[in-house]
Length: 379
Image (cartoon, rainbow, N blue to C red; front, side, top):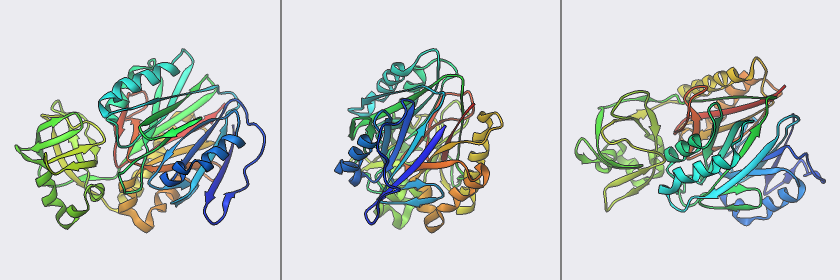
């Protein structure tokens, strides 16, 4: 496996300069950048011209990960040329959130065959039910195929997110690349570092990913009480106060963050399902706990590599973590580097949601407020 990394900024342009000529037919260009730069189109077009033959997969972000640093208002392109691993890409449109399951399943079915090992997927971060998307993807592939990825970001604007899929780029899109064959080694893990606090409340009214009532009271009004002065900055301030939700049957809870609020209906829309009859509890964290979560994710992701170190790792971390960590954000990347060593290429983005199984061999789930890591190595 060969890897190369390029960064575009307003001051320096592309560093290093983009090469000329075609790349291998088993190459993927993972591209992460600011929405304004995606919309301009010129930079993505340049990448297509310079990396003919590569599958191009990318999205807008709430911050780009370039090795051990976090940057904004840039475009990061990481080229992975697999030596023994065939690839195939597919994409679709999510017109509205209720179509998420069907779009995910159709996309997965396009990629699925007997040799498929892994699917890496990027989705619109606003017009989607991430839980349904994950279920649809899992339902469209054979047993044993792992799925990871994330929901695209838009800083803290929550206005529009973009996804790149080869020759197309735009909002309300979902794109994926399938990786095939027995030479590929894949690791993945998703860890948080948040802890619940305050009263445990029953979800008394919810529909899909929309929450209306907790304990028979307006969920939005209750949430604003906890936010205090932060309520004026909703929905972006909700990233500082996610909730832990558990369905009525119990089991392992998942973290959810707010995408939008509706003052007229007194409702909150989340990136994934809110199970009516289940429970909800606010969560809090600190920088050290988030760094510990990133370390745990890195260590757990190595379990799928059969003792190898990763050649490349794609990191998808929630924008809420970035808001909490502020100037210390890079500490979670440094912690991951300490686990992986100096040779692995690190790339990724800050997201509106992360896609990953709870454990190796499990079905893909939507997470929020986690560091989700996908590692790749080849025999």
